[in-house]
Amino acid sequence: MDESARQLELVQVTFRNGLRNCVHWQISVLDRVSRDPQLSVFGARGMVELLFGWVNAVGGLRPAVVHGADSSLPYNYLYEMVVGNINGIPGGLYVKLGLKDADEDYPEVTIVSCHVATFPRGSQ
Image 1 (cartoon, rainbow, N blue to C red):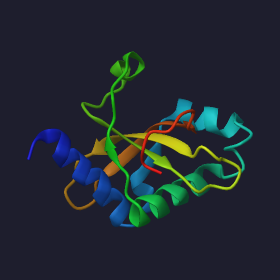
Image 2 (image 1 turned 180 degrees about the horizontal axis):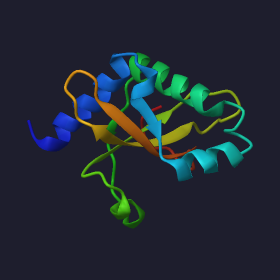
Image 3 (image 1 turned 120 degrees about the vertical axis):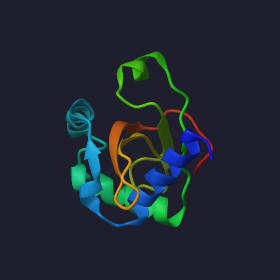
């Protein structure tokens, strides 16, 4: 198994283990989400609940295409998903994650991007 696939599995374990304290927010992303009228209604905890529900019911996590803005992030690999079927967000919610702690039993992730999906990405 290559390193990207191993880290993807650990990101999935984060959501399967059910521990909400293993999901963190990049501060700048949390600030932007809290100012977005469409997303602020969910709150930080509500958004994390949406992620847990989606990953455990549907899956949809996949390696993300890394763009120039991502190069300053302290992650070797990033993973993305589009969370669908959200009231008030017809296009879904685009979320990008990085593996913060690769502990085999209790890995942790950081949300490094979260916004309304502007175009279909195939996981809805």
